[in-house]
Amino acid sequence: MSPAPSFVSLPDLASRPAGGAVLWANDDLFAEKENLIKPGPAEHRPATFGHKGQVYDGWETRRRRGVTADSHDSAIVRLGAPAIIRGVVVDTSWFTGNYPPEIAVRAAFVEGYPTPEELADKTEWTTIVARQPIQGDTANPLPVDSPRRWTHVRLDIYPDGGVARLRVHGEGLLDPRFTELPLDLAALANGGRITACSNMFYSSPNNLLLPGTARTMGEGWETSRRRDAGNDWVQVRLAGHGVLTAAELDTTYFLGNSPGSATLTGRDGDGDWFDLLPRVDLQPDTVHRFLLDEARPATEARLDIHPDGGMARLRLFGRLTDDGLRRVTEAWAASAG
Image (cartoon, rainbow, N blue to C red; front, top):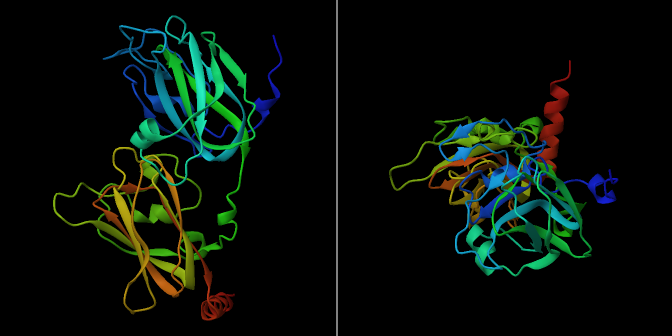
């Protein structure tokens, strides 16, 4: 047995626990594209048939007809962080008579939060693994020689078939624009709390302020479906009087039920609400990060989602004012035994 290539010791930045997401595939009739980035090895239970055939723990497309030399299916994965990619593993475990004979991998660096359609049709892709044969029921390791940073990879399979897992091993890069992120003033652990909410039909808005990342859709906040012209919202009492400088709106695991857009406003005490973040479009299953320019301090923030849907987490980063720090210090001292 050949030794594993050195790049596999690097983190898999496409995996779900690392923040990766499968954003698009042109076809996944037989097995869901989201299986590509599950953290564990693929499993197989023979003779387990669903409505569409044998159930596979991977991504599987239908059989193509009228195949030409360039016919292929594709899936696009967003990495958990911008990264220099050192190698990929195209794992075809349990796919024996239905694996793709050849594959290629392309990559792109894309700013912001493009739609799946923009990624599929309007993005310029660079080949990082040239088209080549692979083996079935095998973890196929493929080194990458590129010094550039990438945010997305596109797996092309020729002409069709199934892939159990796609691993993208590399080194994450810190975006220097976000190196000054301060304290999360919305976090429950820091004293933030939910004070009002328009709707919590499926799950509590308190989940928005929990530590860590959500592991399922059920660990976020989800509203019922609106049938009117309004929108849903949630209000947060911040940990203290402070100036908010960045926000993180996380729709992880919300695929067909994420909000279409959102706004953030703030207020100081009982004062008027002022804009923190103008209305921005949101993408499903995505951690959105935004810098905030408003210098006015706030004690409360309100997230409005349009029109409804679900969010996994809300982070509101900022710095306490002198008055805010004084009040936090007094409250800490007063609570001593």
